Length: 203
Image 1 (cartoon, helix red, strand yellow):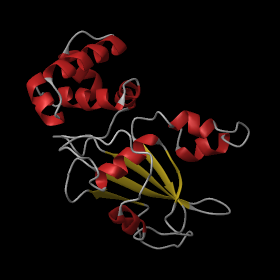
Image 2 (image 1 turned 45 degrees about the horizontal axis):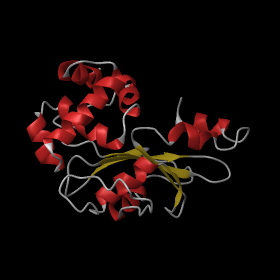
Image 3 (image 1 turned 30 degrees about the vertical axis):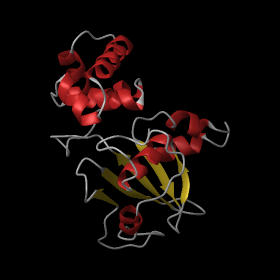
């Protein structure tokens, strides 16, 4: 089911869209014709903060970010899309990769609607990623949705084949903290090994 389908369900049940998409493991952001935020989930606030280089430590996420500031690169990219149903050989979506971190990716689409149309942005800050262009499978999204943002950081590094020491160094956490988070991940997902976890995220 796409975002438009979700939105069509929202009026009869107030807050349904928010409830369904708040815990989606990727950032979702909707902008109006003036490229101002109309709706976003917490993951989008985190992704925008990372894009705006707000984290205080290298490769760490600003998990307490509550104020969303749309990065200029993303706002500018919206202008390359047709708005208002303008016909012609133009893109219906565009992808933008951060200039300072290739692990930050945004896919921006134009969503025609009445009486007003919108830009829909899917923000992804999975890093590091050797397979940046590989689409995330529904199964992997379901797995990531079971984890906290900090656990997702660890799980995706396990997927990339990093050791506990490498993960700890990358995230500036102690190896003990990473091991504790791994134990929590295994418990939540019912898996017993890094290999099984990686397979679930590649599935």
